[in-house]
View 1 (cartoon, rainbow, N blue to C red):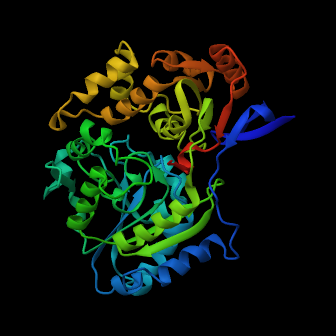
View 2 (view 1 turned 180 degrees about the vertical axis):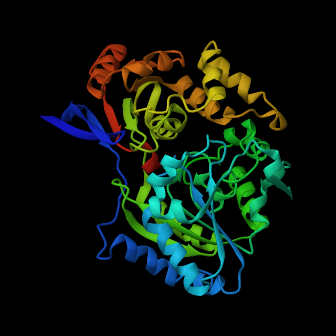
Length: 425
């Protein structure tokens, strides 16, 4: 019997057709059934009943300068829903406060005005003060002390100007920070490039605790929590999303307590047992996370957990934004092999970490284990092949290529959304 499986690709999907007998497993998160509440009601309920904190309207009383940190264009945070509610709650408690939206780009490129309008809507972008963080402008940073790891903590100076600092975001599995959301809005969100690079050093990335779903003893997470504490982050709103990017749950309140509650809920929904196979097919969950190869590495780590040594990973990503980082790309364009690239990166001292080195380290680790066939537009073919991977125009063509590489109709594990699951034994 032939089975058809839909896999996210950009803003559309591709249909994989596969003999049922070859399928080892189709690994998907256990999203809860749609709640009776609307998405707005879910968020408002969390804001009105925060965890470990006074309500936001009360926190806003008497404050003169309020800063809201929000995610950039690479994250599917539903800010058209969340930001109006945040602003309403703040102004309910303090109508006259000056409110600034600070876009947490980390070390990504700056978010464009068109992307801001797509994220927040015209009303907010036209009438609110919006600043886009730039990690490469040292004059925009203030020193906050030394991270537990030993690196210097420098953050956007806008934070010190705030007498109330809050953030919105979303929680999903993260391939080396354990989970997204919470403290990540500060580090790497609004941190100096040097701070981010030290936190993402090769030794930390190689640490076995720096994996999806792990917070305890995770050195990257520990630095991030410290940064959030000393920054003065007071309140967060984080949502959980289903495969259609709709809000299924929300947590609000104390940055650590609320985030931990959201992570527990995320873990319950996404933790699965890896199912080994010679061929593993996955994606980055579609737009906006599959805009470049840099981001696509996240979904590939789920496939890595299932791929047999010497097997084949098929990765689907639209790549409207190309490779996603010049330094990331150059590691592969100038490297002899994944093994050689990995050895060079692992020898880099923490204080000499270079931009995007961590993503190259993880991709090299994956490619050392399994061959990768990348499904994307033909305009990206030379880019893919220049990074030690194979190119295919669609998922079924990629499967045919994988069959020719394995010399058989090998068993297949399908992970439709690689960033949406945590695969642990």
